[in-house]
Image 1 (tube, rainbow, N blue to C red):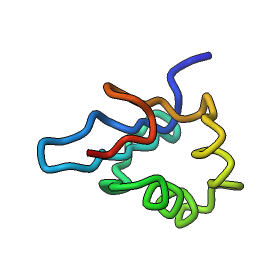
Image 2 (spheres, rainbow, N blue to C red; image 1 turned 30 degrees about the vertical axis):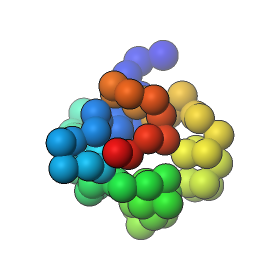
Image 3 (cartoon, helix red, strand yellow; image 1 turned 120 degrees about the vertical axis):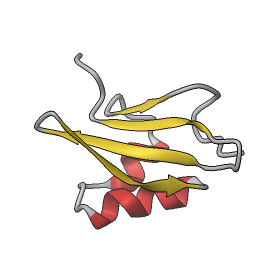
Image 4 (spheres, one colour; image 1 turned 90 degrees about the vertical axis):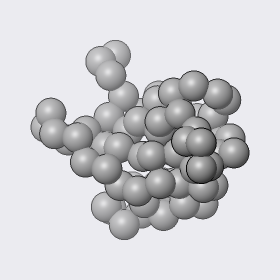
Length: 73
């Protein structure tokens, strides 16, 4: 598989993780997530189908940088 289209960056020193989506080769920052609920909401707002399943089901569509997935602090 090529790079995952949704990237959750490393935890920032202030807490939270920047979330980026790549569509047609263009990266767009969706926001800074402080929880899985935030990440799900970002995906819901851009009309990604079944965002709960993507995030909570550890989909290969999402790449988590650094630390463990689902950690925000």
